[in-house]
Length: 361
Image (tube, rainbow, N blue to C red; front, top):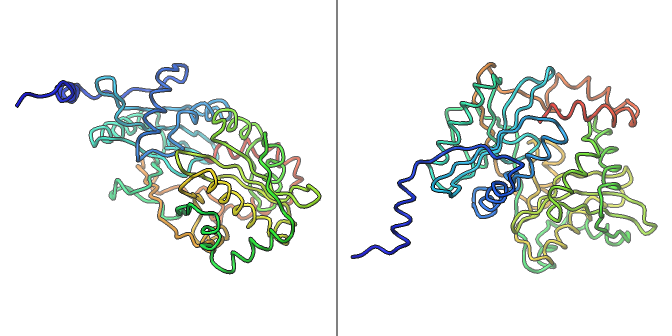
């Protein structure tokens, strides 16, 4: 039986060697090929997009190592990596800093193996303390695992009212309270109102804020796939805001902030409902509530919406340390710093915060 031209071409390509290369962010052809692969690969996420290389370099000054595996001119896998080197928090290589998901996205086992091997070679060459892979599923049971974070994802029903009815009764009552309070949502052309609410919110929680420049860069780099929704009251006063990412048929509310009066008026509940409602009307299929630390308020809030937690597999290859780093607010050793940060004038906190948060990753 004679082979077709397509079969011959496929077999010839399969015999070609697999090469691991580094993405040149100044090469528009290579960038377009990377993003086309990410868009089509089922394992890829929004955080595998090439635009993160631009954001991490321009805003934070981090060295990036965006690796891709290629065979016969076709991309088979990608692995975005960035190094965060800090006197306070150590020296790491991660996929990907400031992202909830990462690790290898690939079409073939050979690409996975080649990219992970190159990542470990790069980590050793850079002399980092550890390599971190923020995987959606476990790849290396033999590596130490950070058992702290979970994600919350749920399908969006095709009808708006079906999504309302899917919210558990008590949480649905809070959404309806926001509606009765005359709240409304508005889409913002820039992060101005969002940043004011976000910076105030994280200051109240005793953690440093990202710079306004970071959020400007996110909107510039990701364009229509990065939007800000702000909830206002009848007088137009900003109460709560969320910056969301869009990827394929998913919406990811990622950064949020609110005023002190938001809780009383149910503005936060209304905010997420409005994002879900708008996403339903756009034909999106998945609402990704993002990650939360187990046992926290945000974890309970998302559970109350009827979302079930799904474990995240943050796996570590340790080189110059004996245990997984715990650079998060749950670590008791940061309690004094958190309490001090809350008492700091917000103007000073907003100026100092970006110098600290850039090192956390």
